[in-house]
Length: 192
Image (cartoon, rainbow, N blue to C red; front, side):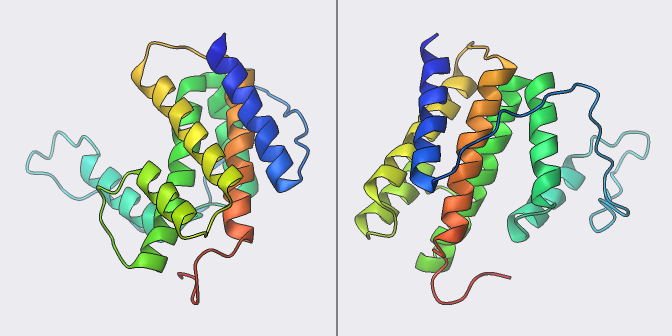
């Protein structure tokens, strides 16, 4: 399958860029991770007009705002376990979640450097701006755009990917997140 090859190639490129060698993850559907004590307490669901029905949407929006403000919202090892578990249960969803975490980081860097908090700036434009301003090497920018294209194929087609392929994508994204963090791209003052 073409998409599987693209994902494996992206994982290899990310290893070459970051100088890491990814150990094949162990997958176990029975792996559980308990949320930290008090998880979610900072953003309890608000009351709705119908007390019998609460769809959680206010809580979700509140959690997403919190997520944008505090990346990472969980320790890295817990995030890896969560994403690997998701790769087993819902491989396509794991690709979408992994990409969104990388996108959040890229947007935070963009806002920190350029002061524009425009939610309509595409990920591609962010990456091309970084490349234009020589903030990212061409090979890194190309891989970020490739990972974005893969994410879009998974999101907007009927393509189903295997768990192992999703894990390769997660590894590639993890390598790129690590690169972005280690490269200290936030400029003068990292966000709190």
